[in-house]
Length: 165
Image (cartoon, rainbow, N blue to C red):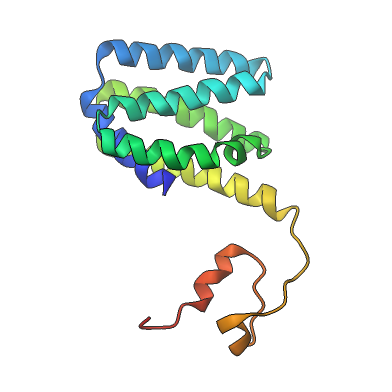
């Protein structure tokens, strides 16, 4: 959901961002890179959050921003507390550099795709962090019990959907 919201916001932002807003986003991006190079992760994540919020603000879509702020606040801690591999860090840094390029080009479609993929990759990091601490198997329940299944992770809930329901 967050990826879809950020993607839609990014598409609008690419069209509507002012030169001043773009300069501010670029400055925050540079501060984020500096924090990352110094391994100051608290500062890195603060700047990262500012970039995402600034792109959403540049969309100039109040309804979209309201829904985003409501949902994003709920996932921020998980999003930023998950440990990343070196490869995941490199991708996140590259994604942010590309965000700036696409904003400069006013490539809304490209920026929207990138934001959706960027958030999707972050959800994989969060999922991996939580699955590392998985709890023992739960007892079957409801429809899963009727079909003899045991649910291990939330993604398995899709298996409960009956055709045509």
